[in-house]
Image (tube, rainbow over all chains, first blue to last red; front, side):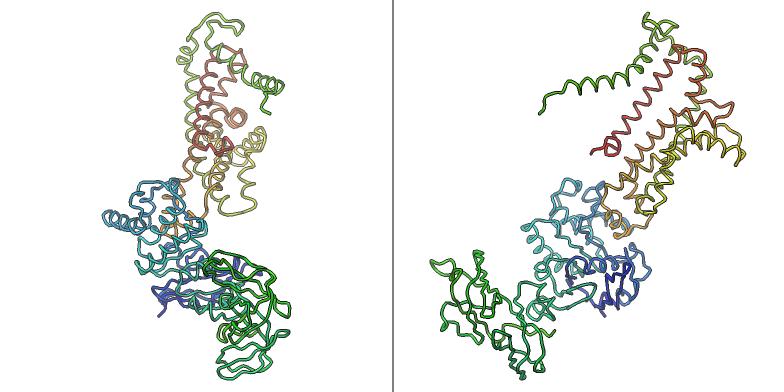
Length: 361
Length: 259
């Protein structure tokens, strides 16, 4: 049985469906992420799990038992808030002890568990500090310790890294993964940062307008997006309007108006004439100066319109014959050369037949 | 840019002089060894000694202190609830209802309370009616201070308490109460000051028999402004000033307009 299950979860605010008929199951021990742009309903779901908000329809089940009508303090789960929500009048140790005190644990157990958990987040020496004396990253760790100390069935994290600067954010991501592995507690993580979601999660549910667009493992989401929205939201991608020309069990031939034929690998039986988008990641496109070296199945001529030199890679924006611009990401490593092409250069772009996917409209 | 403006200085000094010279005069003449508030004769503490021997004055002072203590305690409890309610539930009419007594002219409040006590409740005026009246006009002040304190706080702190296993009561006792404590202390001291200084409303609802300090002073100056009045006024002034300064230490954000 799934640890946490949403059944047709719906929440409306006036005319707006913040959460619209969402059904999902989250397994014990999972690092599960709700990902989507602001206003997609992810935070509303989190608040309903925590008990600060109630669904208008549908149900949330924990271990198969409905949470309807259970007040927040009776739910065996804790939340790490975006603002950390540390109690400003308590020390770090006092904050971390709070859930244990509420659970009426013995003084001895409280002391042991607080020390243990502070050690887990590397804050032993800050036990007697007050929240206002801590840095952003330290506050974050206190909030995590406070959420984990009473060993909840589930830890909810509401954009917990949102307030940190980029470098600290990356460090905390690594720590968060290690921490989750160590304590084995199920994490439900909410974020709008797709890279963060990819880096941290076992599974991700991509949401839009209160609905789940796709729920999958990170690499599946990235390589096999279910639709244009998911493809576009996760990472950079080229979307080329196409229609199906020929579909065999192995090879799919697509017709791109003004461009020509594109070969793709697709086992689905598709009808000729079906419209959609061909989605292609920039890093899977090669850019060459000579036609002969561009020896992959799909090959088109173009001109470098713009380029962004990023150090390790260069992003080329190449205008194709029909005028549409596709982006290609090429590694830079070559002795004595930083980048391989300049703006205005005539080039060939090419990619393997299995590099992209066809997304039905 | 930073050149001191002479007109600004003159105007400010004039305002302060207008505000504080009368008070200073009262204080100075309370130490004057003369029955008349006319010229400085010599230093004395006789008037303060005389106060301590004045039974009526002491009774009035005791009444004032007791009423101030009780009314500000009760007003603090009720005002805190009102402040929390105004912060948490956005009822449109609640702030209006709570804050009206603060803005209402005192004389109006006095008259309406008198009518209410006599005509509606048929109450005998005295200690109890004064107490209720003082609570009435103090609640609004406490509520405003408590609400201001809560408004400056991260709302998720209170959700976090519940989330981490605290019942509504435990969350109030362990989180809300300690966080609004400075506002409660400030509100209490404000109420205390308002109560002990109040003349107009008390005048209407006191009836006969029970007298507070301001009423006693008023009845004395009907005869003449004696140095004894100066002395008791000086003491009252000192008490008020101490309370206000203490209150502003506890809730600087509310009373000083900055952190």
